[in-house]
Amino acid sequence: VLMIGIDGNSKQNFQRHMPKTRNFLLNDLNAIELHQYNKLGEKTYPNVVALLTGKSQTEMIRSNWTAAQTFDNVNDDFIWSDFRKAGYRTGTVFDQYHLTAFHYQKKGWDKAPVDFYRRAGLHYRNRDKLMRRHNKHCIGDIPEITLNHDFWIQMATTFNNSKTRPYFGYSFTTHLTHDNHNLASAGDHLYLGFLQDLKDKNIINNTVLIFFSDHGQRFGATRSTYNGIIESRTPYMFLIFPPWFYQKYPDILKVLKINQERLTTNRDIYETLRDIANFQGTTKLGDINKRGISLFQEIPRERMCEHAEIPLEYCLCNRLTDSTVSYSMSLVLAATVQRKIRRKMYSKWRKCADLTVKEVNNVMVVQSDKTHVNESAKEVTLYQITMTTTPGDAIYEATVKFFNVSKKTEVVGDIVRINMYRGQAECIPSPVLRPFCFCK
Image (tube, one colour):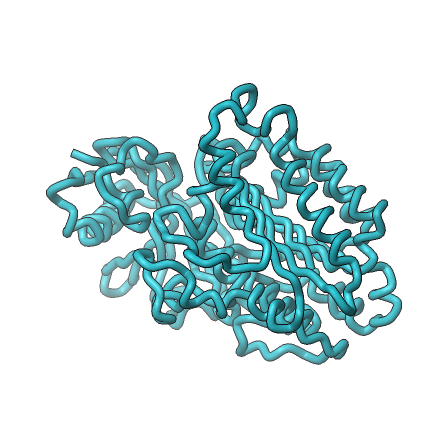
């Protein structure tokens, strides 16, 4: 099993900037692409945690883990531990030393979480300035992406017997696309070459390949547009099975093709990985009341965001429409968001400035999936507001519930910052609070 992830690359951006890779996945490797794949959280961490453990951020904390601790005591919760127990060699590759989901303002691991953990080499590579002197995306004269892909080719050819020496690999690349999603085009021919190698060396004949991203673009000018909102919520997910697999298990292929058009999330991939680690080769109808359903089970057509526990503010079943709200209503919505930010930041008032509304950028009506809320449309109106605060010109996006009878308001779910805050919030360490801080 080999998982290849790219940071901040929406499925639309993948189509625009990496067409050669995408076409090879679909036409040469017969990949299964999930067309209604919805992210679960704003940043990388909540999405990959769900992918690798099936849990939410809150549940990780309940599992006796905090950001001040390493992940060692919860490493058994990660899917690579399931594969290791099933006899697989396991490995991980990251291209960042401190900006991974598990190390940025977190402690990572003290002990190697997998059998082949390439962190020490990455650490020394990043400390040597000569390594990236000519191009930050290269190690010497070799593209960093190629260097990482060479490791997987070596691992796959070394452990090339799926019966006696199976392997599991997890790779996540941040450097290329984290700050600029348009740079994905520079990796198109590199990823294409890697996939061609997997095919030419017959690695794909005994490997399940999962090619994915965590979310779309989170910052930048296009993020504030309607398309930008949608793209931020739509990562991509491709699953490639060996050619013989579809012939041997036609019922599973049938279910996979059905599930292409069903609402899916990272938790479903986690459950699928668990099924692969303990493969039975059977199918059945999935339980709609379970938030994670293996793709080897048919996901019910009626599944909505509530069933999959997709937060309302990220749910793509909702429709956003232009709103002609009054000036006074827009101020009420903005004030609701401002109050929540103030409550969130109350303990940091000595270090962080009090943020006030500078401008209401946009207000849209959210026509919500009715299973997501208990109130009827007559009782409640949902709005999505984008607003700018001062000082610092932070731009926030939030979903606000307006109770039509009582005229009360409340913020639903996360308040999301959609422009960069690098250089503004260094006075506090909390990754949760930094988007809301402008240091005094």
